[in-house]
Image (cartoon, rainbow, N blue to C red; front, side, top):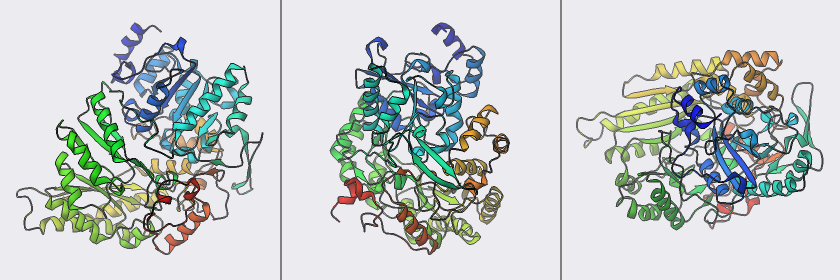
Length: 614
């Protein structure tokens, strides 16, 4: 379809800027002068995908090479999908508007299990067979990376290659191998067998699964000399690895419409529910000098007047004070505000508050996760009620009147007393504000309590735990709501149905591929969106495939059971997760990585916090 007709169709839908392309800093190349075309697909809306740092990094890195042209592709919203299907418009990339079926690679980033139906929908919109075995040619190859790859099995039927771990190096190694095999006219199978030898590359078609009579996995084994386990890739030196000096600047408002500067990867804390805290180990930091120069370049090349610091726990950065001092030297002068998300309660100081007040003053957000000390010890949060109240008081004394607190519901060993503890803690924070003699005059305090449903994830000490059933989750939500007695506390919670399906796919095996395909045929897509999610259709798909979703989400697993992700090696051992699970049951905490090494196994990478002097 010609561009003029396409642009006319853009005007018939909401937010045509999602599909038009042509943004500042987008990269357009002569396709006749590149060897490899890579369609970077984000299986959600433009606004969410354009906010994702990983996409920005790889888009910039790929396009820095003359032989590669990387273009962006997002899931079209319901209205534009209808237009596309009615007018036979195949899924296209934003930069060239060429159909992605013409590309060498179609790469998905898997950030969230609830986006899986969008992966299938995007392949279908591209006019491609959904299953890997039905795509016979060497190209296009469907590849995927991101945190969900730590258990890629539910998508094993549809994806040719998964990247396990951080992608900056392994992606380019695979592209170079592809160029070599394409030049000599190799078959797809020959290429996949060779690709499986690259560390961090998982080729699901080269692995087979046998099952026991009770539905658990009996054995998992490779063929064609593929490695028995797939080891996660990490970037050793964050100072020297590629980082963009500019971002594509959108024409429409996106979720995080600001510059982003990464300061380190990994986390020292070891919260037992947190997958990211384990799969990104060990902690590796950037130097303040590199952070400062990179942040300055991004702001100069985009015009953004806000920059957000990115990490799993910003206040754990060992050089935070000098970094902020360096950045404030130019951000204040240029009137650029600095956002510091992911702050810890137990190391939030008056000095840090003073630095934050220099550049930005809005509500502060913290994550106690549980309402009682017993349950915080179970999940290894390692913060006390005294620290929470002291932190809030520090914030109130600094002029803040709004605090947002994140909690989880349905955690292992949780009781109604723990739930009541969330409401009680919120009330104590309200009381703390009104007990201050010098509180701001005429200003009321606002405490927001946001509660999400616990989802047991692979590569955590809680991977063995069941999720609480939907009915019990809803009872817990109503009980907690009844415990809140003041309008000073705003209470919100997430839909339990989506959390249930998230747990199913987080802990599922490749038998779920049939369910996923059936749900897609029934019209499921954008399952992470309340207005699109249809639990009844998912349950119908499970029933048609004769699969019980509770088998994956609501069943406790023994330590000896072979999990669907057993062949993926993130560097942290299963023995460590077993040990931490046992400690959780006794409410015994584990010190953070800088206090004492817990022997998780991440020393195998010989980098980062594991080799710091303590």
